[in-house]
Image 1 (cartoon, rainbow, N blue to C red):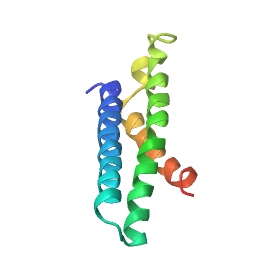
Image 2 (cartoon, rainbow, N blue to C red; image 1 turned 60 degrees about the vertical axis):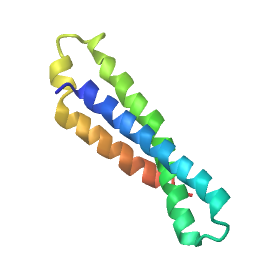
Image 3 (cartoon, rainbow, N blue to C red; image 1 turned 180 degrees about the vertical axis):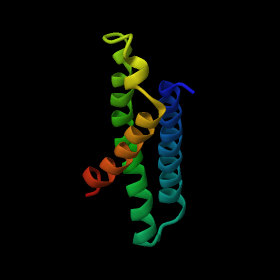
Length: 100
């Protein structure tokens, strides 16, 4: 599997999760007037994390275009293992930087 496709699938799943969470928050705001703060905070934090993960994922996809600059070294630089490490770094970084 191509590392670029792994990042693209991660981006699509991340955006679907973000849209789903924001729609759930919107529906809850109109239907449930009294909601526990802990449940609301969890939903808002998850929406915040998925929102902040999109630019990081796009930045990793831009780095993937290193094939234009170094076409012969692309196979050694952009591996599947490094792609998964970049996704883990994105998820870890958003929890550190994104939490209020």
